[in-house]
Amino acid sequence: MSYSSVFAGLCLILSASFVGLWIKKRMFLKAAFYEDYYSYLLFATEKISYERMPVGELIAAFTKGNQREFSRFLKGEKTVVPVSENATRDICEYLNGIGKTDAETQIASLKGKAAEVKRFVETECVKYRKDGNLYFKLSVLVGAVLFIIFV
Amino acid sequence: MLNDILPKRVFNLLPKEVTEVRVRRDKPLVYYTTQKKVMTECLITQAEFDYVLSCVTERSLYAVTEKLVCGFLPLKDGLRVGIAGEGVAEGEKIKTVKHITSLSIRIPHQIFGIANFLGINGYFKKNVLIVSPPAAGKTTLLREIARTISDTGQTVVILDERGEISGVCGDSFSLKIGKNTDVLFGFPKRIAYENALRALNPDYLITDELSGEKDVEGVLRAYYGGVKVIATLHGASLDCFHGVFEPLKKVFDHLILLSKVPRVGTVVEEVVL
Image (cartoon, rainbow over all chains, first blue to last red; front, side):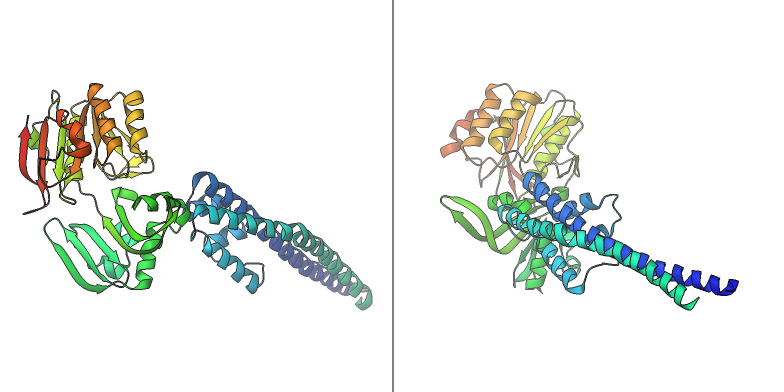
């Protein structure tokens, strides 16, 4: 076994690991995006209930010092939204609808949405994280197998 | 501020000295200056009206519902938006306003020196009532009187329910109201009188647009408590102490009647008792 083939094999393992890492990062981002969405809904419910805080101030207060994907998405900044186009459209539609009703209706709507997102976070986001870790391990494994087969 | 709430096309039509802008759904734009009313041919579209409405409500209807019910929205820099639409009633109470069709945006003005004719100095001790029809410059004169008295060192408390006198914006004021002035903003009048007299120890109490029994009661309390009052009242003549306002006859010893003809803020009659 020559040094060059060992080097090529190691490169193969590394490349596969990077692919796995990228997939894992994306899955974790997706989970964090939904978790932040849920946090925002809770934050909005609280601030509207007690302070009747307008939408602009809500966004400013929630995103202050926070550079995570959901905060950037909320501010309308260019961001890599890690969720599907349909899901993004649904979230946009819901967020754009905030502020178009009286406080009572708004709070009820936010609570309902938060409960829905909470269920999603508790089931799907745990799965995203688990899958992310699994994909990473699989990629490393695939790299190792390819190393054995070809080198 | 006005450019933040009006579409660019509409804003560009307005002169600098504009005092009021009327925006109505599917109707032409109307605006007022201190000297005239101008009916333009600029039709306000549905989309433009909705844009203005969403700006004045900060895209948060829930945050302004209580104010909508009172018929106006106070904005930054002392701007006030009057609202016309359909009231949604729940029993005897109006819950909210829907199908909003008109917005009347009032822009406050500060004209220094317009209260000089009163000869205000450190010894000025009078209860002044300013009477005029709407939009004749009552609030502008009231603000200048408040500022002048305050700057002589006397403690002035402004009961500024709608933020129009002080131009309150968060915890600062966009209009000059004097060095020795305290402002109660957003308080219903009944509570404002009580808080001012109990907690702020004023020499002068300033209040805009006396409108009912609660105001009369508050002004009398201040008067009997030895606090001077400067107030405004809607009216066309100085013979205005009728009905609910009758008890105020003994309170005010300096009456001023304003007119918007030939121009806003014209003093047409002044009575010193």
